[in-house]
Image: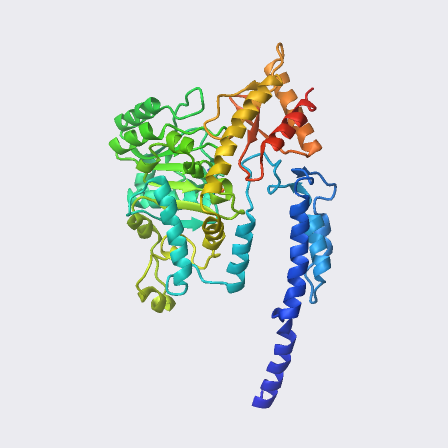
Length: 482
Ligand SMILES: *Cc1c(COP(=O)(O)O)cnc(C)c1O
């Protein structure tokens, strides 16, 4: 190719690639269309319901395959609205009271917008010093909330599962669990621990460790005496007690394990003490939360999900490790092509304390709402959720439901158990109630199995859930009774 044909070729390609960079007027047109769509979504959020059953389940999306040429923004948004946003659960809606509800603060969406437009590199201090400082200052804020010392470090990961994986891998290396020692290492947890813990152990190469399910008390919390007993038994058998995993808010019932007592035992026995506070952690912003989670500050590592109780959009999970050096030991790396980046002094980089290198600039979606609003509205919303859970429990009991224990946080368990019904009959009745509520769609509730009993759950976590939503849930439940 001569230089002239090369230049002509380049000119043609540049022209063909031009749609990748819309000009100001085109940007405004696209932005206005997107804003109109999301504004309509927000305006209708109270009426759309919390679960939308559709026959097609978003199948229409397949009518817009990826081709050589594009479609209009109106066509694209029609697919998003009809095929993606509409069908299924509506985690942004106030009536989403199932599983652990999500958030979706608007301020976070705007933070994501800035993060995406500027595409700041948030993995390494050298490339994005401000972005890295922002992540680290947020981690320090959370570390202060937990009560961790200055030695602590952490990472904003994509969610609680990855955050737990980071903690498990760090605990593994800190205690030298590898190869032959794996089979004699013991992890203590309860049957109420989140299933991502077992997944994390397998992913960390620890599928062979022994899992000891410690007995629960009547409120589904780990029994510290049973823990001490299990550790003593294992030692007597020549096993190696390694890690104790407590929950600060189990997913099933919201139970908070007695962290102070468990932490004492873990320390005495030289075990790594991990607290999975993915759901409950940010209740530390409330007085009740601080009281019930006392002892969390003694842990070696902790996980909190801002996309749960800090109301952020999905894709935010935090891990903190008491001794940042241990976190760095596990995630240390070196690429020859990165020699310039790694020589620069400065803050600890996220890439040095997590499996990720290039990452979404997640800090901005957390920083913007916190810095704009301060923490007070967050604390108020969380206190509101705690009270709503108690309100619901009292009212649903009035409707004739059998209720579970007074909630530690904001999960309420209850079931329909008419006198004389066998366990199987009662289970079938409760399953039918869940189905009817889902079909009605105004609120979305979920269920679990507790000691063989099909049990209904209501979880108040969304910042949009207020008393009128709980009253609606009670209405829907009373009209869904057998
Ligand atoms: C939600 C949850 C997890 C998993 O977190 P993801 O963000 O869904 O990956 C882990 N542990 C507990 C207690 C949870 O509630």
